[in-house]
Length: 210
Image 1 (cartoon, helix red, strand yellow):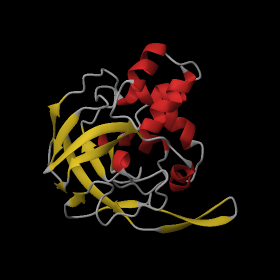
Image 2: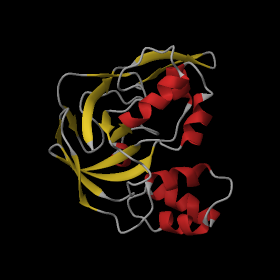
Image 3: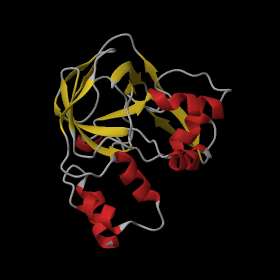
C-alpha cells in the first residue's frame, strides 16, 4: 500500500435541517507531510469529537482504488483526493483483507487498524446527495480509522507495511457489513466482541445483541 495524497480540512459552514453547523469533511491535498498524533492529525479540523477524532479515530484512511467507482456515479463533482474526508489516500488499501487489530508502519508512524467509517449526513452534504449513504453502505468499502501507537509524519510516497497481523481474522469489511446487516452472523459478532482493538462501546452493544 502506498500513500498518494495527504489531506487536511478546514472548518466549513453548512446548513442541515434549517440549522447552521460546521464540518471538517471538506479536505484537500496538501504538498507536505502530515503529523499523526494520538487523537487526531495535527492541523486538521475535527468539529464533533463525539463522532470524530479520539484514540480510536485518530486518522481516517481511504483507498484510491475506489475513486473510479464513485467518479462514475457522481461525474458532475469536482474531483480531488480527500473527497471522502480522508486524511490519507492510499493505493492498494483493501478493506476485505485488512484485519481489525493489525499494526502497520506508515511513514514514521506506527498505527493499529480499529474500525471502518460509518457514513453520516455530512458525507451526503459533501456529495450533494443523501442517497450516497445507502450507496456507501451497499458498496462495502468504507475505508478505515486507525489508532496511533507511535506518533509521527506521513509523506506522499510512503508505504504502509504490515508489522503484526491481528490474531483475529475479522476484517474491516466484515465488521462494516456486520454493523449494517439486519441479521447478524453470530461467529462474526463473537469475533468482534473478543477483539480488543475495537472501541469498548461497540463491543458492549454487540454483547447486548448477542
